[in-house]
Length: 391
View 1 (spheres, rainbow, N blue to C red):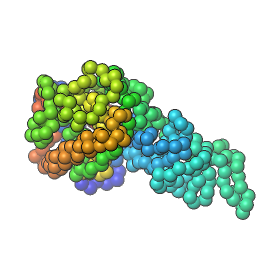
View 2 (cartoon, one colour):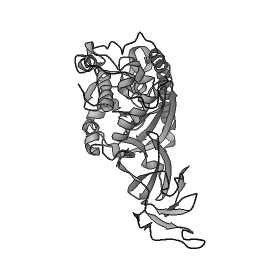
View 3 (spheres, one colour):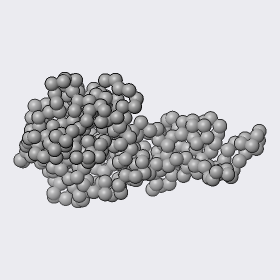
View 4 (cartoon, rainbow, N blue to C red):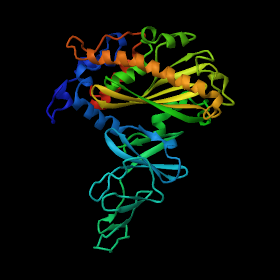
């Protein structure tokens, strides 16, 4: 769908008073977002600027940076960044651009030692981003080590960041709410779960021919399990419920057998009885999925690549006794194989959802009151992020 560069969201498709009334009312009367929100490049750009720029987004893993001075290039909401381990217990994030002439500084994982050198004119920065020296700045052999000029000190542009467990989050705007406040719904659910006894094992990436919102919604959607995921459907034990809503956390819980909840892998010492058979999965708005089993934890990113293409990146963590243990290799492999199969099933239906958004006969959907409260809430959060709560 083509639009002129200056088009606004209101010009693309206004959300009228009736839509806002429905999205805030009973689920049976609500409608989802109009089709253009899943098809338009301009909507995606607005999402980057008005949503992803202004909230906490996953940037990467601390375990990607094994030594002080390790650096890795990353991208968040289309912005090229660098993640650097500046001290044993500190990871910092900077924009991946030299303040001098705008050269990209880091293109691949590297171990910088004590400084970062621009590949263009060899301006050199300390790990904290401060300018250390400018080679030949005053002429051949005349180097500058003042760290700045009459305009003040020079440094890389740092991005506000916070670390939780193995995960580094960034706030591109610097204006997002307090990180602990953002994370509070997850912390409430995991208050007695021994997350610190889990280690990173591996990552799995797949692409969906669908808008990121459809992929994220599908992750927390319980209703489709009956039809699309026969093996997962078999795993459910206890009462089958719709999703729960805790602010920006949309989640569900169920109970599973020992085999079904983690391939027979060891559980951490001191696992509370409340987690002995419990499984939690959900979405922390906007695009972070999390699944917690007694023997494993999975963190999931839904990264928009285009209006109709999404990368899903899964990071797998197992109890410390399982990671690197040859006796658990088969169990770990079976977990990843199971998720590949599950994602394959989801890829097909997500593509069908995307194709359906091209139909002029689809006005946003008729929601199922028992199952779709979270989908309704997700659409409302998207609309409020893009437009403000204007009605």
